[in-house]
Amino acid sequence: MARQPRKVTILNLPPFLPGETIVGHFIRICIENCVLPLDTGRYIFGRSIITYPWTLSRGLEHFIEKTGKVLGDSESMIANQTIFPAIAPFLSERHRQQCVEDMLTAPGGKASNNVWRGRTREEMKWCFQCIAEDTKKFGHSYWHREHQFALVTRCLKHKMPLHTDCGECAGHRHKNVKTRLPVMECICGKPARLYRIPGAEDLNGILEERIHGIFDNLLADPIPEEEFPFIAAAMQTRATELGLMNDRGIQMAEMKRHIDTFNAPNFFHTYAWRRERRFTSIRRHLYHGTVSPELEFNVILVAVLFESPQQFRETIRRKFKRSELPINIWEEVDGWGRETIDLDDRPNFHSGARKVRSIQAEERDERASKIIQRNYEREIVSLEKPKRMTKSELLRSASPVILYQTEKYPRSAALLAEYTESDRAWSLRRAEWLLTNPGQYDMAQIRRATKLKAAELESLLTEIRNRKEG
Image (cartoon, rainbow, N blue to C red; front, side, top):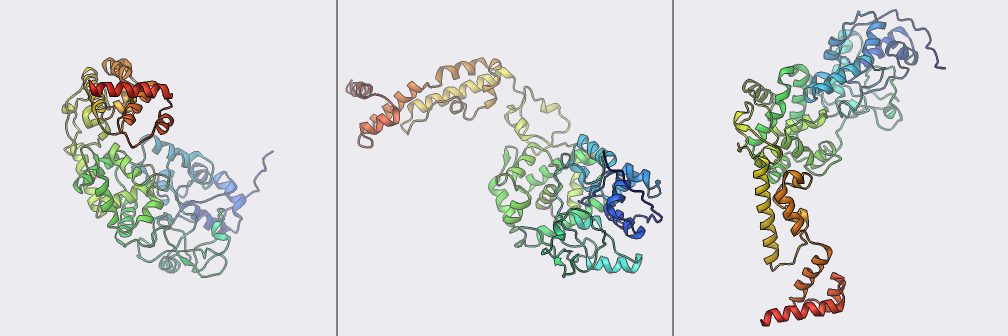
């Protein structure tokens, strides 16, 4: 049987302060009413343990009901006390609705990571200048939402470095809420330490400055909802202007040189594509015209492409006015990604991509069959070391979709069935090449490589000699 919460009496319900996190406000409720967070959290949020991150809290409907709606409605709380306004532009409509529903109805704690893949540091961060000003103005300090974003190392208002716990005690690793407000030292009494981004030790300052400006802009002046679909198009256009991509794809060498100007390989490895190969994340989203649901990655990518938040916002507005949506380069190039592509009638097709004519399945089949025939003939007459003629080798430079939709491409499927080598045919062709290069391999090596019997090799060698003499 579930334990019933103790009765909690809340006599003083303080109002929200500018940019205060909801969990930070909950801490002030506990302090000002001298109540413990365990039962108070269960009473207010519907859950006994409230954990950070401090950026997206849940159980807001329960919170509003228990506080008598005197602190405002859920819409104002989400807009002013969470970082959802900065996250929303990079989520799909379905994920935005799911995230809002998660914050409203789910019991306490943090919003689901299934909706957005943002990582928020466990360390609580604070600004010494904000503590002094807040204490002078309100009589106490409080937790600011903009300080808790993982990539923020300086106060967006005072440009002062942020501090966190000492890192030597167990307090900074404990996820449960501590009923304390920001102070000048760690929870254990030791001096606070400067907050550093892992991997950013060699950062040259340019990228870090851009990241702070972009995040500040996303919170201070949220992107209008009608402009959300045009963010990826703005990124693609800027990448094209910088020479990082064209109508054929991403220019990886140029991308690497551009990223190297920030002198931050460790930083990008830690945050931009921690679980993927080098530039896979950047290439995938620019190539397919999408945005990542991970706020940190988007802030980094925008900072890499745009020199200022104003340039980013102006590009989005320009795309919005022209109704130029992002393109999927994989689907546009040569028309291999779709059954038909009617680009001439497409209103949102922008000049950054090459217009191609519609290619029907029969035309694609004819083109692919020519490629297969060319690859086969080239391999047969080649004097280089032979390659086995597999389906993927024959389809080199053609679309691999033919392998899975053979009924739509009968000519290509017939050539693949005819030219694909069996194990026996491959062994004989390989042995013939080895035998025509005397002095490089002895018969024992050839037998091991081709798995043919000595008699078969002797017969093949005789046939080769007769061909030469004839």
